[in-house]
Amino acid sequence: MRRLQEGHGHAERRFLEQVWWPATGSFDHLHPEYEVHDFKDGTRYLDFAYLRFPMRICIEIDGYGPHSKDVSRWQFADQLMRQNHLVIDGWRIIRFSYDDISEKPRRCQQLIQQLLGIWFAEESQQLLLSPKEQQIIHFMIQKQTKLTPLEVSQHIGITDRHARTLLHRLVQAKVLMSASGNKRIRSYKLNPGAKHLSW
Image (cartoon, rainbow, N blue to C red; front, side, top):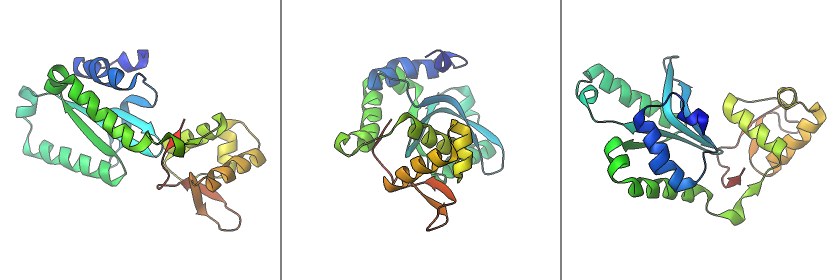
């Protein structure tokens, strides 16, 4: 809770208090001021990122004020291109106006609940992961690249053999897939088709 409140403006805090918390009752998987690298190798920050494999949601809070009216044509085009590249990179983007958060919070709560429900409501189809397997998935989401058993074992603090066992189980569960190698997998990556994971 503390890290979500620090450094955030009035609109973002209001979103947490009036929309996110009443809708979900949890701040798990929600990251404020989330850093992403853009298509020009620069750094951008999302207001919030909800990271729960396989879903990546960008949540933006837009105020309507003098700064939004005075955006230059170049800035306007840059904002659109930034959003396009997030979509290409697999992000879902949800935008809320400050007015809706303040005046229609219940409508915003329902939108959040509908979005998350599409992916996570089918509990019977969810896969329960062990704490070590959850660490592997979190690590892969953070790195966004293929990983070897050695890299996984060093990050989590387990033997290479144990890492291979866990990675093999995640492949069988269709959470991960081979990034290189067929009979003997040398590296692994997230399976973009995996859904309904319970963390």
